Length: 498
Image (cartoon, rainbow, N blue to C red; front, side):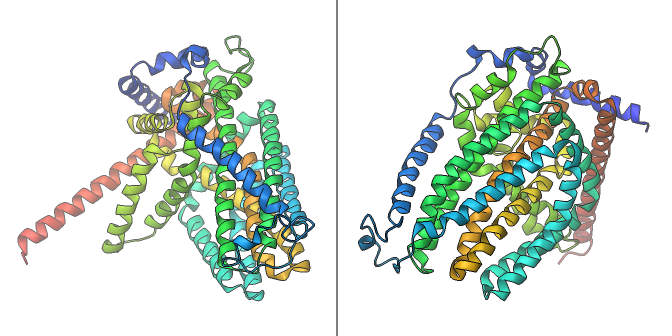
């Protein structure tokens, strides 16, 4: 079948399905300015907004207390008497470790800013390097951990290297299409320089919070010698930092998605129909009426996405092991159910229509399934590739802080290095999210109205349509194969009963 026929059939089926399944959605797309009308916006998921704010205020107070208790004077606030049974107190000070975290924050910010600066000219090369270098970097760190007699962390990083290698092997055939999508997303983001300014601004906000967070974390590291209580407290602080970082990343996600969606709808940022002050409106809604939905989705989305990638990669390499395949299929179906309610495409719906998170996630997933675009989304690995770049940035950041800690406080290397790695991942992730936002917006627009992508980039539209057609054919063939296999099994059981 020719490209033109494929494109036409895919476009027609997607358009018809969108109208049939989503009713008046097409009308709302053609009038993109209405989606940013104030009267259509209501506060969503307010409970989670309140939880996040209370968490920030409460944790800020705890961090200040933990840091001040060991700042320039051991047990300044006399709280060690409450921890004698949990911690083995020593004379460490906050300022012994705070500079290490400052190095981590600086390294992460430099990596993130550098990535944004090279976005237009070297982004694809950097992502390819991340995919192929990450396995080696994890293996090297594993060897260093074994050399430092940190056997648990050595095994953990070695396992990570093995899983990364297996995942890349399992999706190697998808990488050309993935890089094509990322290239087009970079093209879109590069045409919107204000998007980079938003990412820079949020990176500064994250650095300010990390200054407070690392102050408290330094107080915890200085308070004891490797006891379980200190590790548990650091885990709690790390979960809080992860949530805060995810909230800021997804806030940028919503801002960028809203702007990219409008640019695609109106045919360019300079189009006469483009609503005025689109970026500021998107920013205002992201930090007000939609902020509760962002806080809610940030708790679960990243973990579910990562689990889904791993299960998909493992599932494709199982072979004919029926028992193992049955178990993995059960997990796969469970994760697929969760994806309906927690997926990154919800943020585009939040940005454009101001819905709550669960409704946005469900609508986005139903849209993909009704149009068949879900097959294209499942084939694309752009999110995983961007995550690899984020993890590599975090590892480099953790290495910088860990090397300095090794020189001065060898018994604290793993503790400082692991938490510094998380800081680096958050900062680099803020840079990566601008491209991921463009990718999600492109897929949503293609599912809503394929002509939007055709008008923006006809060649890319043809490539998307051809790949979608191939994936739908592949799925149909697999379904027929499974059906035939089941029928043969049933026939054999009827012929040779037990």
